[in-house]
Length: 285
Image (cartoon, rainbow, N blue to C red; front, side, top):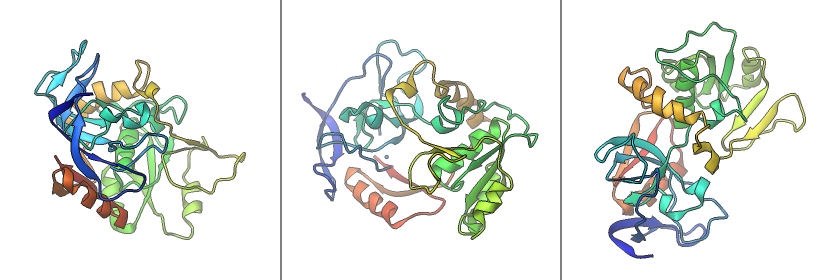
């Protein structure tokens, strides 16, 4: 494939190779229903052939649109999630200057195969206390987003965090926040849990007994999550634009810019490996 003179990427050239290798990358024009956004979170599908370009979270300005795109125009500011993981297609990784993004978020809360919650609204549905959702890690990027979305859908939110982040998580819509280091955290969560004993798990280990009263299901990001029937479309197309304007949905946790340029992505990954609390690590490209 021909190299685009303006496209560069941070390549993972071999398994666990560091630092990432910055160099030219193929430029793939947008296909039907796709956008090109000049531009990132570390995740590499083990089955994807190397070298590859990973990275997921993206915001930027549209510079090209594909056939059939009517909702967006060149010059629009957008936020999205790159599609490398569901597509296994290197041009859709985020750690490059030009890529083709897909929009994927909220699957665990609203997907019919997971929690299947009602969709969020503007203004938010009032919570009557009859529907409770437990969201772990409410001070994290994913957790904080989930708290806001579920609260806007009319659910009473119970979350976990360290005590220093209790106020942050409550400001996002949680009614109760439990210290995840508490020796009685399990009992505290069970005391306010909902009736449906189901866990939608994005990552990490768990110790829930297989075949017990609690069902645990891994959130599988696949090409189907961007289809016409996915609940993610109304969230992004209808809810999120209005919620951002009304400040009902706010970007949290606060971003921390750790560098500018593809050659600084490795530094950002090292920051993540050391651990962060109530921060979203951002790279400017």
